[in-house]
Structures are given as structure tokens and as C-alpha cells.
Length: 549
Image: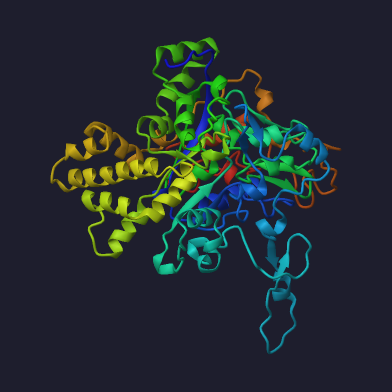
């Protein structure tokens, strides 16, 4: 191996195929119902789907010159938080002004439905005015979590997209955002569960921690003191402040489901089946060194962190570190390792932040295909696709700023692989014959091309989600980890519940609960109605309930 390995650790990760995302927001809604359907989290979306180009949620979160998130390289070659070191944190511990305000997210609202019911008889139709969920007063709806959904407001906001501004400045020409000339794709976002999370380094009280067994980043609600430095430190702005409890909250990667081998709620309910879950093996001692000086080398540096699970040395070190055999087997079968390291079609989101994100994306070929189809060309022909990828520089440059710190060559290579796969498999499907030269043109074999097609297009449930079960002897340590405020006199200190008004009592996060859930969802017969009480939203969703025997 290129470097001397001392230890091997496992990390759960996700890959999303953006060509399959239709922007239906099902993942966002189910995540909202499961995790943030409580008082104090009205504006919080652990999972949100952004239309690109667009401002995102919160608005312009990618502008790190303003928000100061992530890491930067020092002159000595080390890393420091963009928001400042220990002294700066100490001076600003009681005030953290460099973070989004509620207006940068949106003010959540409901409607005065009571007026529809109680309005007296008259000649006019009663209306349900929007009311703020924060103040309870009448409000005007001016923004939301998906305000520019499907290019709805791009004519007014497209020019203020940070990436568009950067491209315009570099090219020294105006990018016109009329609807007809624009391109569009959807970008689902969750917490990146980074290898080197800047949110964790920013927390003065040490409340944010990274689980050693699987790398999931969580917030210890008992230790959180509401400093909000983590919100500033996260460049993806995926940590939120619960204004009722005074605590920070974030995506949990649905860890209770992961521990019993179930996929996350967003993955389970995704209409387009675009998510892949699995584990990778990595070298924890090389994480900091992988944050190299040249931004365009960050992609390759992070890929080098991911170790070959078939390598005998890696396997031996993993066993020596106490890693269970089924985890090693899962790493060898991991779809995310295949997509990231073997096929090399998945890319990290904004590697220039140097947090080493573990949620990767397969860039969409659809803007190129749609452009060809709109012009009347054969959008499946390899020659047309390859030529269009080289000609349509705006989509490629935009994708490069998202996934490769501006390196268009890497994005072009990935899109060419996807184009070659599309053209190659058309020949197989239509019976016109295989074209090995198409695979060779992008550095692949015909066998690898068909394997990649199977994984991206027709992979079954067990192929997309390869999740080993947790191995813990202390079963009770798995219980109620997400409900640390749920006890009498807890830090929440609210009369109605530990999380504030109308919070109620959360369902215990117990491994037994999710083991039973897994058995029901994967059963061949309909679930019995016995023992299905005290269920909570999509966390306990049973896909087989109501099915006919």
C-alpha cells in the first residue's frame, strides 16, 4: 500500500444518483414527520431538496465569505476553522452573529383554519389567513424551504446564486437566466456526517460527537448549552437551533434504523430510488493530511482515504481492531464504495470546505440530454452526448463548482461514463449488439459497464442498502439516545413536555422497536394488528400493513 496503515475504521455513507431525483420532496416530508414534527423545529428540515441553480436553504449557504463555515489551510500546512480559532471562539462565545437568521431560512406558518369554521354566516367567503408559527400573529408568506422549486423564482433570484456569481465573475460575462436558457436539476441534501466535521470542532461544550463504530455525527442534548457556534462552523448549514429547548439539532442518519440494518427514512420512502447506503473502510490517521492545499486535489485525496476492503492488509487490520466479520463483508459488498472508488462516478459536495463529506452525489446527465432532445437530436447516441458534454460548458462548470472545487475535467469524465453507459446499454437492450469501444473510450470494460448499469438502474433493495447490524453488548445503551431530554426535570424545563409545547413524549429509541419494524417491513405476509400500538409516523412505518394475505 502507498502509506503505512496503523488502524482501519468503518464509516457509514450515502450516494445519491441525481439523475433519478424528480423533486417530489417525499424524502423531506417523511423526514420532517419522523424527526422534526415538534414545537421548536417548525423551520427545520434535516432533509431538503433544492432546485439548482437556486439560492438553497438557508439562502446562499454556500457563501462562506459571509457565513465562515468549514476549514481553511494555514501557512504551516495545518487546518483551522474559517470562523476563527480558540481565542476567537472564547471572545464570541456569548454572541455568535455570523450565522443565518430566521429570515434566511423562512418564518414557518400555518393558516387560521378556525376562522373557516367559526366565521358567521354572510355573503362573503371566509378566508384562512397565514399566521406565524413563531409569534402567532398574521404574517405574509415571503420565502420557504423550497421557494425556488422547479425554477419557480429563478428569474428573480438566479443571478444571486453564489456559484452563478462565481462563474460570471470568472468568465467576465453575464449568464442569462431566462427560463428558456436555463438548466435545472434537483439536489437533495442532508447532514454530510463528515470525516472531519467542523461543527464538532466549533462546539465549546463538546456536545457534538462522532460515533467511533460507524462515523455518524450526533448532538448530545444533555451537554449542549445552545452556544450556536456549531451553526456557524457547519459550511452546509445542516445544524439547527431548537428555539423551544435552546438546543442544537441535526440529521441523525436515522441511526436507530441503521443499527438494525434498515435504511434511513429518506432512503426507504424515496420515489426515485436514488439513494445508496453502505459502509466504507478508511484510514483515520490520514484524514487531516487529506485536506491538501490545492482545492482541485481534494477529491482524489479523499478517495485515497477509502481503503480497498478486499486488501489482505486492510482486512487484517480491521480484524485486529475488533471489527466484526459481517462488517468486513458488508464493506466488500458496499454499493457506495463501488460507486465512489471502483466506478468513480460519485463526487463529494463542496470538497473545498475540507470537512471530508460522506454523502456523495452522481452528477446529473439530464441537463445535457434534455438540451439535445429539445433541439431534435438523438439524446441517446454516444456521439451526440459526448459532443454536447464538451459544448455545454455552463452545466458542466456549475456541476464542477458543486462537486470538484471547479475542476471540470473530473465532472466531464463522470458524465462521459454515464453517457457511454446509456449508449452501450441501448445497444444491448435494442438487440443491435454490444459496443466494447464505448466502454474502452471511458476507460472501462464491457463487464464493468454492465455492472455499473445494474447498480445504477435496476439494483434491488438488498443491493442498494448494504447495512450491517450494530454490535453492542450493552443493549440498553441503544435505548432512548435521541431522547436525552425526556425525563422529569430535564434540561428542557417546559411544562407540556421536554421539547416544549405540544411536544408530547417521544417514542423510545430502542433497538427492539426497530428490529420488530424490520421484521414487519420485510415479511411476506401482512402484519398483525397486535402489538402495533404507540407508533409514531414514518419511523414505525409498516410497508406491509393493510396488504391482502
